[in-house]
Image (cartoon, rainbow, N blue to C red; front, side, top):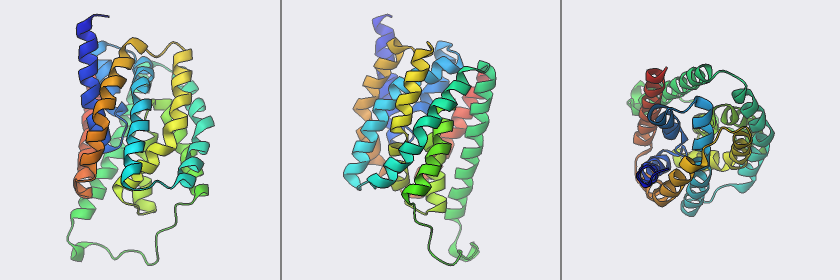
Length: 259
């Protein structure tokens, strides 16, 4: 690999790390379509390569989130435990299907998640008088048992798509359990760390991870994740959700273009 390509990967990793830190997505949603479009990788190879960058980025982001507000470790560990085995199952399923089918499935999944965020942002922006009365009673507590169930679902999706577990977990945590956006992002990322390790090992073992590309992406990303996380705590929640939705729609467009 030439020095120019390595430098480009470092720069791209920095940008992806910054955006991933702001949006709480680990950067994989940006890296995967970029690797498919710019480097001509198959969907499986792009997902495995992105995991090389995503794993250390997630760990750095969680550390920075925890410095702002303490993460409930019992809940995070329960969610992570639920995700571990099912991440391997999801990865095995992904490695066994056609690349174009996997790419289209990835795009459809992200499209519906983005629609949900648009609805959530629109609902939050309506005047209070126009909103439907809130349901009586407090939101259910996000207990370790509930986190483990969510971890199973997120682990399966994270293994199948290489990323996506945290993307699904965040809207569920904010809507059902009514936690703040940044707290949801911190918990969701904490839950997917062990599963992401399993997914990376599985993709690498199958020869579907390019470490010569993924390592420079990871190094570049780690420098800018803290900047992105710091900005996330300064942005209003509604704007953060809107940015998240726009990023997902952009990813869907890139994947549809490649298809």
